[in-house]
Each structure stands twice: as structure tokens, then as C-alpha cells.
Image (cartoon, rainbow, N blue to C red):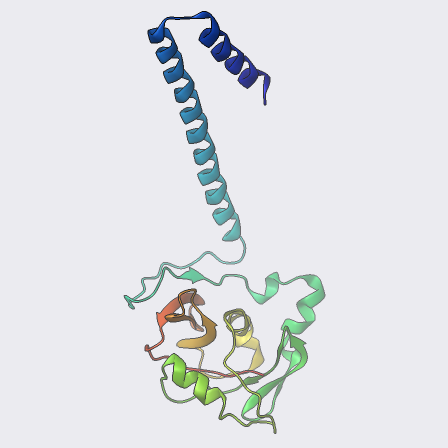
Length: 213
């Protein structure tokens, strides 16, 4: 407790003991509550300012987000993936160069994995699918002799967006499903490989899918 707060508490205790005037005590109580309310308001304002500063700092690197309006009314507020390959740590920079990718015909092989990604489908599936159908499609993919292809997570799709111009994949101008579900499990996240936007969509919505392993 600070010296000022100790002084306020002492003043309140002495007044309660020495004063028999109920009106005086009532006035003091009101004054004390006012001080508490003002302090609480100051703390809330500081917290809001800290959140605002953190948001500004988060969006301060890379290119500035472009103005964009979501046409899907079922989506949450989108955010922009604006951390480009050039912004990765120096120790990881070698992963984000053309020499790290090998064109194997129907898929791209990563010489050195980026996270858990070692292969990426070169061409997206040719039809729009619901989230459930996208997950089912992934179970049917057999490429490179591997059966364990899957729909990428939200973070993995963000990675694909960052490397889309250097890794050799096709079709980078539309929305793609991720396997990451929303907290309510009613929707799932999708990512625009054209603009780098991330937003949630209803699982019945139809978007493209590109698998990884």
C-alpha cells in the first residue's frame, strides 16, 4: 500500500472514531468511494491503451494491411498476414529461398522442412468443398507414395502464403480451408492466398483445399 493510500485509510479510521456526526461519516464514505472509482477508471484506461499499443506494434512490421471488406456475412473480423519471408529470423532465412523447394510434378518437396511441412500439393483440388468434404478429400490423397496427406493448419497455411511466390505451387488467387476449427467448433479458419487475409467461415461454406504432409 502506498503512502498516499495509507494516509487516506488513516484519515478514514480517525474520522470514524472521533466523529459522531453521521452526515460527516456519510460524506467521507462517499469521498472514499469516489477515490476508488477514479482509480479503477484510470486502471481500465491504462489497460485499454496498452492493448491499443500492442495492436499497433503487432501490425508495424512488413507491409501495411490493405483495405478490404469481407463479403461473407458469416465470417468474423479478418486480420492480415503481413509478415513476409524477408522478415523471418536470420537463422531460418535459408528455408525461404527457391533452392529449398523441388518440383515433383504433382507436389512440391521441401529440401529442409518448414515447421512440420515437408511436402505441399502443387495444384489445389479443382472443386470448391465444404470443410467436412475438404477433410475427407485429404484422406484420399496419395502422392509421392505417401498416404498421410492432410489439410494444413491455420499457421501452416500462413506459412504457405509467405512462400507462395517462391515455392512453385499453382493457384494462389482464392480462399483455402485450414484444419483449424473456431472455438465454438461451428466454423473453421480459411486463408486468402491472394491477399493474405485470415478469417473464419461456416463449415458449410465452400472453398478450395491444398494438402500438405
